[in-house]
Image (tube, rainbow over all chains, first blue to last red; front, top):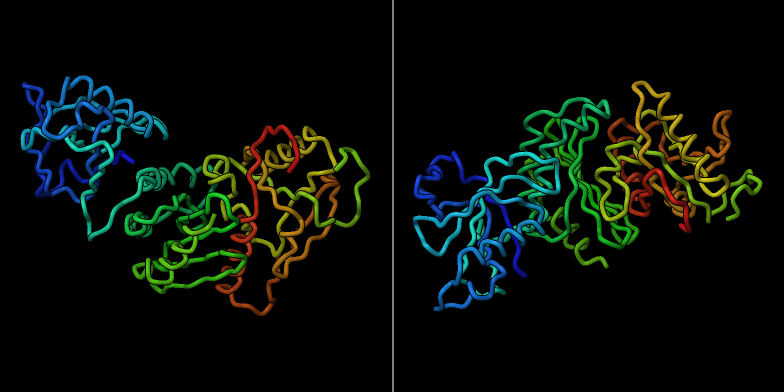
Length: 247
Length: 149
């Protein structure tokens, strides 16, 4: 199944170069091989996806891509062919349609339009794939301050935010979506089984500690971590594995 | 349950108990379940809930809205995290009908917290029970069209 993924480190990162929308309407200095996150999506246009054949009208593929992006909750900016490779379309994700309308910086979508429709090729990071829910969770992490203010919670420190971000990314290869929200002095990452009464939370505390709580098959388990840097460990991964098996 | 029926002094295991919640929970409830923090209250050893099966929906929502408005700062009532009394009374918890002057439908879910436990253990215990309750809950936003649980 094809899906969409925003790259989070494409603009302004050392070594990646900058994206320029030149007068010719083409992006330049896109160094695709250095991307750390994201994957390649082929548009839904069948004509564009048959190997060895013309891609057909670029506008047809672009429309399909925009429609698909909209379904995934993203509004794309201008679509341009990357200079480095004519097989790639590069676009800036202007905003997330699921969250409050805002500019997402720096997110860039790279689309390859000459692959068969069924092929989605992830950009490998540490040999793992990332799930679609990560983008939404990262937006929620960015938005915790608004809830801290309205709920009268104490502020969350920068280290806890960075740790939460790291943990989310490392756990994103598993399929159960996470919800991220602030609590008193900590960030809570909650994984909920779609139907079964099973749930896992990972607490990333302002004091640098962490805790994992799990309620799976009516059994409660927990593990404390003197440092949240130990998360995720085998315990956390095993709880998530069991959660992903829940019906 | 019959709406407007006489209010029993004991909470039966089939009753629906609702924990009234504010905006954060409305925005983020996943898969129809409540967030864990919906069932966390560090100030007390019991969780306040409403017995939802004995009053018209409008009355319950009104009581909840007024209660949230009286808080400092005032909060916006967003809905209930609902858990069956059977699950509320599991894992050593105890459910007790505790009617109040301004809320005759009030009940408490007492948590099994030891008086001699360390602060860290107490905190973990609260969260553990909260996670279990949240896992067995369902989110009902306000205003709600009341139906079968």
